[in-house]
Picture 1 (cartoon, helix red, strand yellow):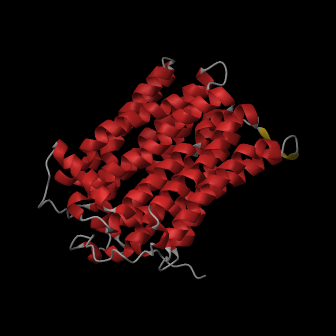
Picture 2 (cartoon, rainbow, N blue to C red):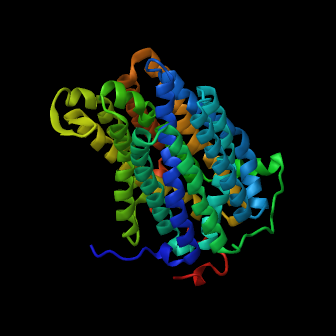
Picture 3 (cartoon, rainbow, N blue to C red):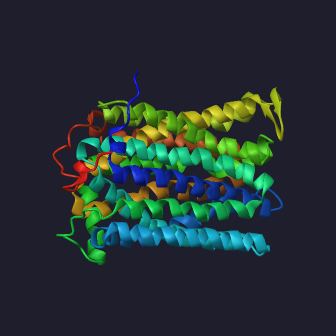
Amino acid sequence: MKLHIPPALRNKRYFYLWLGLIISISGSQMQWAALHWHIRTLTDEPDPFALGGIGLARILPVVIFSFLGGPVADTFNRRRVLFITQSAMALVALALAILTFTGHITIWHIYLLTAIQASAQAFDGPARQAMIPSIVPARDLPNAFSMSSIAQNTGAIIGPALAGIVIATLGQEYTYFFNAISFLAVITALVLMGAVHQDTSNAPGIKFSAALDGFRFIFSKKIILSTMLVDFVATFFASAKTMMPIVARDILHVNEIGYGWLLSAESVGSVIAGVVISQIHTLRKQGRVFISAVTVFGLATILFGFAHKLGAGIILLSLPGFTVTLAFVVAFLAMVLSGAADAVSTIIRNTIRQLSTPDHIRGRMVSVNQIFFQGGPQLGEVESGIVASLLGVPFAIVSGGIGCIVGTALIVLKWPDLRHYNGDEHFSVTTAGPSASLETG
């Protein structure tokens, strides 16, 4: 298959944003990996509930502020909103660096600052996602979401891998400091991007009734609702990465570098899948592909939970810092497979949502969806922590994979039209601003 420049990257404004996101996401993923490892080092014994608590710190602000994030994105200039949210998240990262460097950091500081950052993300997500269809022509929107997935997952490969190296060589605080700097990449992209067209003719204002419009719209669109529910169920049960510090340190017996590799594995698969999809001009039978991808995601999670049993005690290679066992390789490959499956389902889900939503309500639709796609994994972290505390980490992971598959099957039985979704049903929706198609590189 001959490679070509993805159409979305020929748009200058999207290209700037895409590059900025790769750098910023790398920093954010470095911080995410460091936070979980930091909590494990602050506890004397493995404490799954302490790790699960960070999910609760993230989800509460998302649930509370996402109701406002949508109306804000549909009422105010989305580009200006992003300037504010990106700056706020940079300050949170800097605060984590200073507290860690001075030796004053506690688990409760981590929870509090995580909650503040999640509050900023509740406004950042709707504004950023709702802005993309205004800078990319409708015909290139699926490709744009494929490239966004590549940016997300490239950052998620680089970030955790660097986190392990930085923690082992420079210290925990530098992961937070580097993340604070990385936000400058998106801020610079927003400056270079210039003004972005936005339909404000039906601006809702900051009202509770405006937020409810997002719910009404989604519940009127069964194809959007069903994919959101599948995403929530899958990520709620199959939150394997939540327990990664304990899996790496206490089950597979690897150090910070091995931990970083395991965290990066899922995103390796996601990037591979994203690149493949970016080269496909038209993806057909999207409903069946979506369902299959979520099923594979659940199966890969089950494999990850059994990895320590499948390769216990078999040494394949000795590297500086840690020994590579068959169990580690099986766990790594299981996460690669789960990442590839997750990327496919994410690209299809994002495309369905955006092509089915008019611009004037897009921010509110994204804010409601944000509750689903962030609520699933964050509440899943709490659920995994509780189950792991009672029945062990491997049981929590394996049972989560089974729950993902069963939950998806029940949703498909409830909304069978999802199986028959092809992908060309919604091209009548106008998504790009009037000048978007002229912005080519």
